[in-house]
Image 1 (cartoon, rainbow, N blue to C red):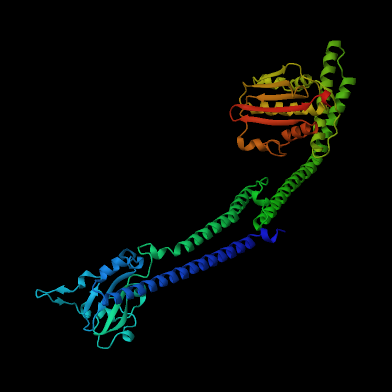
Image 2: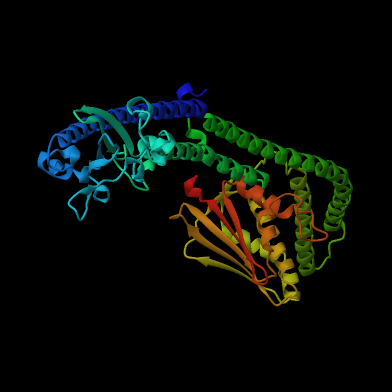
Amino acid sequence: MFDLFSSFRARLLMVLASLLILTLGVQYYLNLLAERNTARIIAEQEQALAAGVALGVKSISSTQRLVELRDAAHQPLLDPQARRIADILVIDDKQQVNDTLDPRYFPVKNDDGTYRYFQLRDVTTLPPLVNANLLLDDNVELPTQALSPPSGSQAVGPRSFPFPIDTDSGRWYVIVVLGHARAQTGLWSPLRPLLPTFAVLIIAILFATILVWRFTRPIEDLSEAARRVAQGDFDFRVRAANRSDEMGELSRVFNEMIANLGRTRELEAKLHLAEQSAVVGRLASAIAHEIRNPLNYINLTLDHLRTSLAPEDKKKRETFERLAVQLKAEVARINTRISEFLNYTRPAKLEMRPLDLRATAEDALRMVEVQAEENDIQLEVEAEGSVPAIMGDEEALRSVFTNLIINGMQAIDGGGGSLTIKLSSHDEGRRAQIEVADTGRGIAPENISQVFEPYFSTKETGTGLGLAIVKKVIDDHDGTIIVKSKEGSGTTFTITLPTASDK
């Protein structure tokens, strides 16, 4: 079982919890900064308001204008560039603008030397007043826009603060107009507080993407594995089996399933082969008796002919004897092939002894010399250098040569081809190599992998045991056999066998 902290679910929960903590931490830090910034802005506004009131009161008792007093004060909060104080209005007891920082409402000098003042109600640039009903007398006439209380976006916009001042000539008012409460303005200013949250979301998405990608990548491997298993490939293994999470556990179970399916397929193939062998074995046992009876009769008749009907002429008797012996040998060979056929699925009983491969190959070729001559097929045995002797069973290897030679001759359609057995030393003299090459029609690519399977044959009358017997004999001799073929260009069987010195 995988460890809890290696679990994808546990890791996902830990990542989500970490992102939640990080988000809360960032938001807390942003709120703390916002509170500090708000406190700083309020403090600056209070200082600016106090400075504006002081400047207005000073203007009432001074002959200097507000603009002159502001310039002489060298107060940073009163600097127009700071945009803290938008305007200061000094209103006399007749509700006239006695002084202001806005040149549009400066008193205008008449021709007779007197001054014409703007009325408070005519100041169209005056923003909403804060607590006007508490600080202004009821008879004070205000501009329309100054009467609406600040709300919404106006809460951080320009605002007016009236301060009543009692003088010898009556009640005057100092109205201080504060600028925007925001320290920064512009299109991106409202978005800047959202940037840290956006960064946290980007990090969360990145981590989630990496985690999901890492978790789902093995699913693609599992899909590919399932496809290959469906096609019969049981050698494939999922690479994610070394992971320690759920996907690793699933991959290991899937690999075990593939291995079990492979073993099951091998067992099914062996069972199928055993069933085929059992069926053919029973059939062969049934017909072997019918074949061996005539062979025994032929064998006994040959013995009778040799003893009773041999020619009196010495030369003819020698020829008669030689032919009779050869016939008896062929009868014995047929009987041996029947035994091999019956014993195909049984453990081999080989009589191993040093053999000359060339002599064995030439002996096998002699059986088909007449047929080869009739079909204009050239037979040849070639030896490259010194061919070492091998340890083998003579009859079994003769059967190998015979099967390959007969198959090669049958593949040469219409005659006129050639069949060559090439012998050579291999693997620095530790093995002997045999190549049986024909110029026949070749083997189709889709059939190459099946040529050594029992009961597989492309011939209408073939049993499919010839090459299977060849493969079994070579395997019993600790040898190897491979086939190379190209349709229309012939086929080459290459065999390697251990030498007598290597045994």
